[in-house]
Image 1: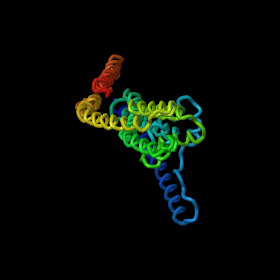
Image 2 (image 1 turned 120 degrees about the horizontal axis):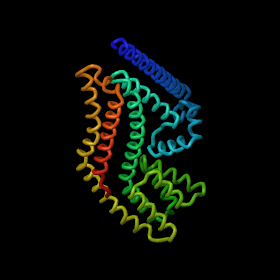
Image 3 (image 1 turned 90 degrees about the horizontal axis):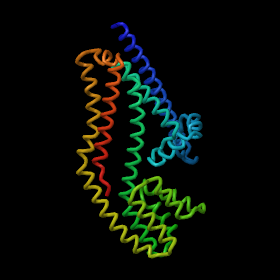
Image 4 (image 1 turned 180 degrees about the horizontal axis):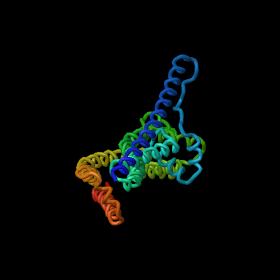
Length: 314
């Protein structure tokens, strides 16, 4: 029994070392490529600057974009604002899943390898949702300034299309980047309603929907855009302060929701540390495996319920 455990541990450590070695070589190659580009740029000052970084996993990215999963992943990555392709994200997620699988199998028990891999996939999806929500929050915080710029521009006699382009130049990311996309769509002949509608789909929020509806209706009916934007600016400022107060009040509840699953995983390590091999014996029977799966499911339900109960729509 001890020899079998030693063989599994040795195999897991060997596979983990191989994965880390491959990731290290990839990082080293990427660093050398960036250094070569920097040297080239500094040496040949007359050549145009290099825009963007060198993309990795181009074949995987090209094949992934043809699938429905790749298309959905591309849309979600665009909403997060991350400078990463679907192929790069998918390859990184597979590397993380493989590493967590090996670590869970080597440190706890072989049964926990697949569970750790599934945890890696869930963590990757949660990371995308977190980045998207963070970008939406930053965009919402810029909405009062955006409405103020549009109001000033339209009051000065500029068309709404021109005002959007001006706001794209003056505002920082993410509002500047998103408005640049809207300005580009308007420049190629897309309607104001469709361009702003795509913006609301990329960054869904009540505040942005109100702003888009105001701009579309004013542009279609020829109403008083300036007065509507002035009133909207004051409303957005008040909602911004209210959202900040609610987020501060619920910060402790948010930390509790993340502490619940962490305590469950920590209990597994504690159990295995108190008595070596306890988890392997427990998961060696179907009853023990079912109990572990049910426990993980209950922790996931607790996390979701705490997050839902602490969600307050303003």
